[in-house]
Image 1 (cartoon, rainbow, N blue to C red):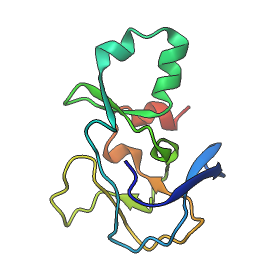
Image 2 (image 1 turned 180 degrees about the vertical axis):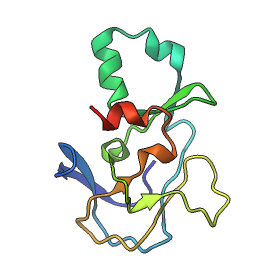
Image 3 (image 1 turned 90 degrees about the horizontal axis):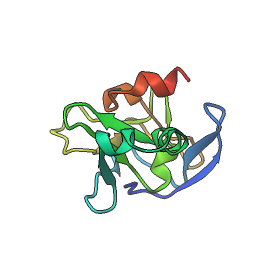
Image 4 (image 1 turned 120 degrees about the horizontal axis):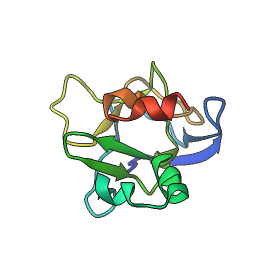
Length: 130
């Protein structure tokens, strides 16, 4: 779940993007996994979906091979696009809890939020190379 104000809009990276709707200082907690809000779905259930439904689901979910679960964020976080040099990510100086992402630098209002999918998604390559 995003913990900051955002809005979605047209992205130069990939169609739709998630944009900061406030100033976010470096180090601020931007996203946190919240059980009961963020959805965890076993891989087997996703694999059993009809092709069109599975393809749509996989546009927005990320996969944790170790847990064998997909996570789907139902808020604007699903529109955060990939960047090799992201402005949101894990903070290596912290013992991050699952799903915590921080501002890696100051983020201005109106700036697109980006994450490095390879940090948390075992199927990132599939989404990035589409």
